[in-house]
Length: 359
Image (cartoon, rainbow, N blue to C red; front, side, top):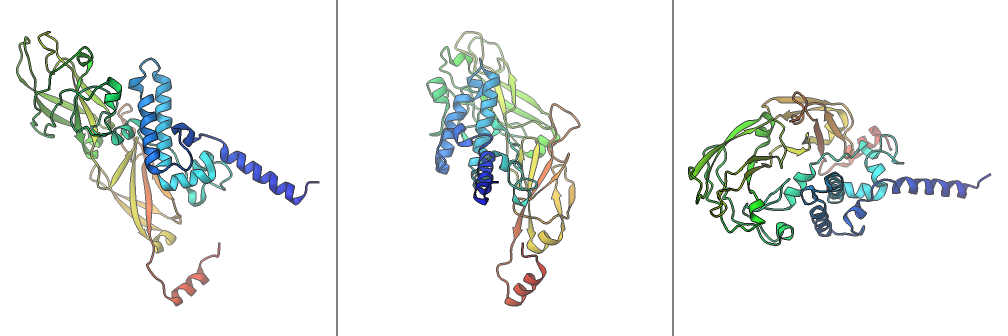
């Protein structure tokens, strides 16, 4: 018969085994558990550059997998709350498994990576290139990763044309070498979540240089945006850019979708995340929350559960459209910011002690 100490030790080691199961996000990014926020960001950038699928054309499947793992590791470790839970309970506890009690984490917290790895990459690397690498595009800074990809800074530069009308785009610079002939000119196409939800048509005007090609110096492109497109989606117009010297060949023009920040929502993959503020009394007793949807509806959601820390309410089928599955949508994920009273008098405290359970 085992002693009480032996049984306690056994439970301890079982818990340790469970906690240590799953992905090691620190190892994925190649950092210590004591890493600072800045070290986490730098490690993500280094790893993401190494495993970006466009930099690994001969090993795309593995690169996509690694690239997503790196994004997930950064998503967890760059968020103080997720990181704290992960450090205490490991991946299994973070995602609702392990030895964290019924339903996973206390407060009903269950993590699932819903982000877009390419969107995270685009957000962290200023200048915006998303799912494709190449020259062009202005606005580079000290975080310009493309010099390490191609051995030099970006070439030329399409100006930032106007959106939603007949925008303007200055001519695209020359100075092309053998590598430059392979590089399309990229231009950010900034769209609101409403435009990406419903779909829309955009018109852009460019000015291009020609030496031997007989064509108009300006051309208007009509861009058909499909519902559900994500940041990083590319629209390519072959041989519509500047002519390469006097070769009779011209660069491709590529518009890259970028999402504008939204007042109410954050997009995570196909899901929409909405944060609602709720007074403590409502969080304990139930309430209704009105969500201003992207299609101009107001969706009223009933919440009858006690809103604990990290509680989320998921409304199926009220997220972003799936571009490849017409008629299907992601989910609406509602998170809550509970507003606590700034002070309580002694009488109220005594009443709460009498009403609320001790545990």
